[in-house]
Amino acid sequence: MRRLISSIAVSGAAIVLAGCTSFPVPFACTAIGYTSVASIQLTPPTAGLSIELCSGHDCTTGPVEMPVEIGATSSPVATGIFGLEGDSLAGWTATLLDSPAEMGFRISDAEGVTVREGIVSVDWIRIDGTERCGGNQTADIVINL
Image: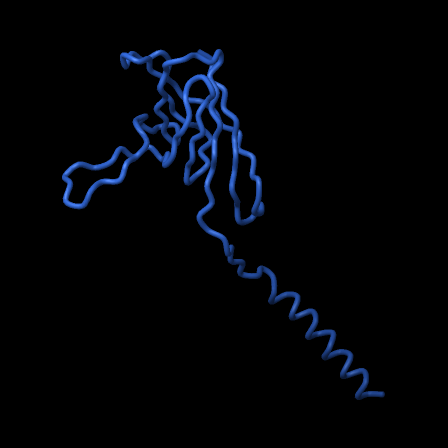
């Protein structure tokens, strides 16, 4: 009987200690390389306009960053946007490596005259992954002209 009680006490202590030592558990997120995709629409849709974007509040708008050739002396414009497709009638799709709460934009006409520029707030929606590790995100942005 004494041996049974000792065995139960040791087992109980082991369970309690195991529970204590597993908290907090080091946690590793396995997936990397998430992207964010923003759909950008103009209101009203207007033909012949172009858009330049950048990621974040204090960013500098410019063309989407292009790779620099080996041996070149110039640097790419760091916009935070690595893909931009579409037009001013159907809208654009921008691909980013992050999901900034704000994005800078500049909309220009065919002559390069700025029609509208500013900062827009972005409400991202995670479409996969987890709260803890993040995931791919999407957002719909409407810019009023």
